Length: 281
Image 1 (cartoon, rainbow, N blue to C red):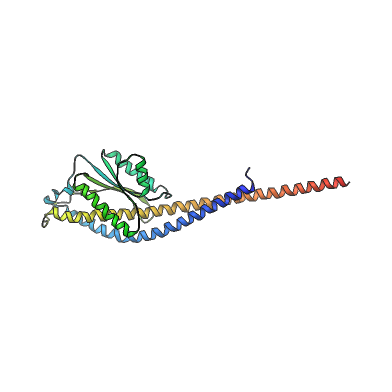
Image 2: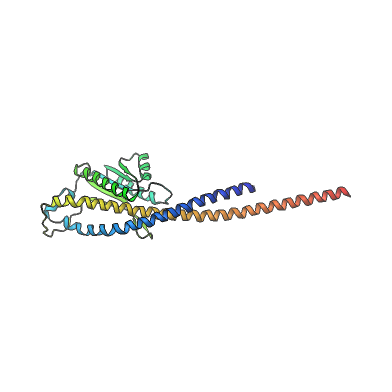
């Protein structure tokens, strides 16, 4: 049976952990508020661009573009968005599971991993990690987004990739989070409506597609970042509740041990007094 000192030490250790998890909860809460602001401005821009994309991919001329070409021999590039750290519940696990399902669907899959957690996981599991990126400040994120777009489009234009997917977590106001795997290239062909392009459909798409891909990636990263912080808040809140419950249980145990110790001391003192009285008689 644990003694009073051991129980007290256990309570102090759990209290220190609770202090840490409470701080992590507050940090995640602050980061989530900032990320929501970025997402608020990113979503309308992407929604507007996505709405007009069918107009750019319609007509016979646009159908000849390499950005609409469906290749028989698939060389798939997958942008995987995970967190830089763990302690976010099942957030990273769900993204990795969706990515592995995509890897099993195609023979030739190359990964472009955003987040240190995903990089470590896929490196250990012998996946082909073509390039890895990490989260940073907003300015750094925008530069990284542009860099990712340039790398992906160059490989697509050079024929090293025939399809590009993005695996990310969709943030729906914090009520639910769904991991999605969406293809961003090649584009879906729009309905033919006789639209004429100048100077050509290929030239127009060459200007539009980089913006579309960059905005899609930026939105997916910010979306995922919101989900990550929300998941971390949930995980830290659960840890705090468990810590409080355990501290309450240990406190009761500590009081019992203390009471038993006091009772034992009283019994020993009474027994000693009785012995002294018997000697005096």
